[in-house]
Length: 148
Image (tube, rainbow, N blue to C red):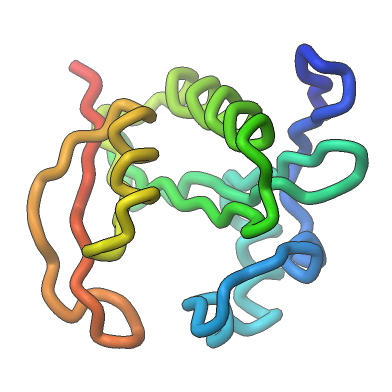
């Protein structure tokens, strides 16, 4: 467990039940993800939970496809305040900067402006459009962050 600068925010390994503590918008892709999936994420991937005062701000992680390539993912609490987003962004940057991968990918639903802006803040560059990418048939942008 890592306590952050404000002494109230921590980053710790993800636990499957953290998902139940998130406020999410209706029709979230998470509505169709099963508890078995989250158990697998907890067991088999590099994933973290960021909490402040025991409230889940975000969950996220990196899924390795093969050496030097991974996909970043994150789910942020819909009830986050602006200073919560700053803490989450700071932690995401630490994780990304420490990652050993040459290529890290991140998908953002086309039209989700907050997600696109956050990808750019995290150092990702939009690479291309993926049609019918998500389970609902929505197009997504592929963002990438490269290390030479």
